[in-house]
Length: 277
Length: 326
Image (cartoon, rainbow over all chains, first blue to last red):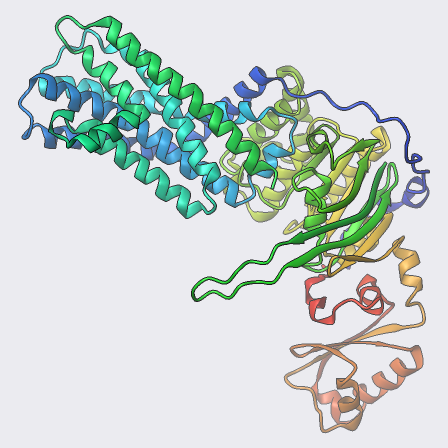
């Protein structure tokens, strides 16, 4: 009946009988903590490897969705500022889909299944887990965002000379949306709620980011101002102008970055709260 | 090495919602007290719902106790739960965090997150995969492995980077004998080389009897006994266990069988009885002779196991199916 070979059991009795340390003995040294940056890099690398398995099909979905929206909107808007807003909004929507929606689902699932225990029993700073994961999700969005932006420029005949600004828009909007997504996923009491919140956040990014703001009622315009991705959309759409106002672009990106810092801080707090129950 | 005193944890009552009845407050741990000595394999044995996992979650700093104290290597884990991560390695029952990683990356990442440098983490990863016989599976995603292999991959992540205390929550679930042997060989090597202490959570009585140095038996949140497996079994030394398996139904028209029915722990067509040796002889004579024998499929006579100890100590017989013997 026993599955254990006798040789590994021999000698167990006397080895097990060592004396216990008396209580009140001085505390023994602890193993070192993992430092923030190496831990962040390790989490980032691990999360990025997940992309190969699970995320690439979803990235296709995100890209096709955005391209499809642009094709639809081609019949509605007639070039100019509206077209710029549609292309910028659709590009940032890819970021919202992955960084907000998928990340909220991931953290919601991880929390519900007890997967957070794995990280919580490792001496790793909470910020490393949250930032590493958020950064990986934001990175997944780069190819989709690029494809969407290039396709949009081709569809609406917009200049592609300033697309380099995506190098700033994707990480900053990505930070803001990923922080929001992670916080939603970690705070939601049930994984279905995390999924729902992620979907709602993405719908908000879709409606408020893609539809030209001039056509929205004023209440919705205020809501638009509250959504972190809006500033990324605005910054990006300004660069399609013949002579972009770079000061305003920088200001929008600054707001985006500030919201990103705040939402990542909130996500880190949410992680701490979710890890020790 | 690890001292637990008067630990109490109560899960609050959940109020019922529409259609779903509420649950009353559950005292998952009730004044739990025990010591783990350095270098031993200490076991927590009990059926599901006995409070094992709740206890372990408090020891690993994942949950704060309502009352009581936990001291590991001189550190107060109730006041500083974050220190637990720097003392122990924990193998939980879930693998969600590692599921989509490859076996090698899961171990390497965990080593990095335990504070190892990149080079050390790679070396540790290779060593532990080799030790557990996982090298051939190194590039496979954990999720794609069979249950036992997945468990082994998670154990690899728990063992990577040395820790003085290993907390393993049912590590050998779903493993085949080869994998189990690899697990206990790896644990034993760490004990011999580093004096590693192991806290093992199990509901497998055979495993408890064979690998544990000492065992705390948990039932409904309380420690009902704490001793060596041999010491515990001496408490029921005067008894033997008779297992009867009927072909279809027990022949209750045989008076001896009808009498046994009341003292047997019945599970379908399988009856389990704890009897004094002469009673056991009489019972076996009754069922192996005459009318009862044709209805009998199989029987065994065995010395008592920790399962019998659990019962003799007042363990809940309804929970007995929660203890397994494989």
